Image (cartoon, rainbow, N blue to C red; front, side):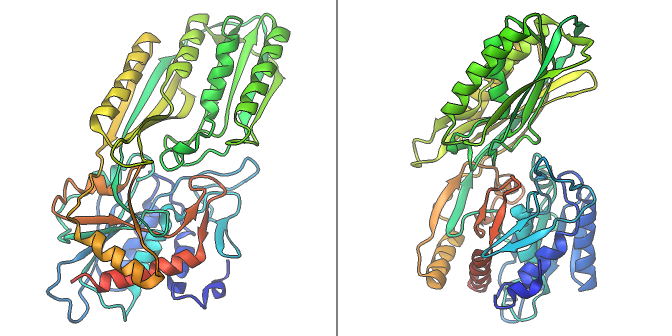
Length: 479
């Protein structure tokens, strides 16, 4: 990417900082390098800065002249990103910079996720902090860690260094769609103890690939296939004839699993192959619109000395088949809003254990608890245990919010279009931050980002420019 591609934009400084942060690895739970960079950025400019033990960073900038008596404004986003890549990519997310490519109005990465979710918030914040001529109240920039893998960064935030009564979260992904509420999340990981027996049969590898995947909240209503659940459906058709050898699928709990594979053994591999081919054709036909590039392959697999016991095989198959997944309930209050969903995000073997990760989203605590209890009941019935649980609260809509009214007026003035206020079926840190900041008025805005959490992720350059104008004007008008 060449910076002169953006010289005609008001937001060229935003892209300059986006390119800079793209040099730093920022996988969830491995954010030290980017966090330290933010601290250095602040110190180089003599700005007040705080870094906590989980690498959250708060940077403060004094009020512009004439805004000294206005309450500080919190600008908030997260520094980590979902690390997904194509099967052909050699990219190492722990050391390689993101390779940026400009195509027309879009900025994308080279066969990896772009990290605009939520690197664009960091870029906006750094451009604000680095500016000399944008009028503003005192700014408190809060950049959190580990948002994508459980929001533990936001959960560690306290009010100690934050006094702002208005918070602008920059993690929305649809220009003109302003989020004023969000779903809470409940992540449940179950654990099977792997018990094996000697294998005397031939083996077969089943692989599901080519799926679109995507964000397990924002794109859950698109009815895309989940590779883990597809494997489960295939397993169930052949359950009386097989033992599982191994199974692995998905990559992160909050992305729809787009790849999965398993190795199985059988006394009658020919019959099993025929059944798999038949059910595979039916499944691919079923998803010909939502996932037209789905591929289900089967191949011989050699030198399998051990396999799961038949009892464990059956328990695993039953768990995958019955585990809740996809859209479960729609909201009765907001038309078109998914109320509750679940995502079977990851299945993996580690240290002779098999782990399943089921991520529940809901705007209703009671509905979330119901689905969580379903998973727990299923775990009990299939002889697995709950290994860990994490949850975060929903962000409830505030009809008396002032920032939403200012934001709508500013967006209309700049674009000539009406903004839409909505709740999102995804976790936003606003829900968690409401606990230490209960009296802070919040809104979530951002530019257009597409195919989030996939290697096709791309960012609209013109939308970044528009929302930079909106953000500056919004801050100017908070008095």
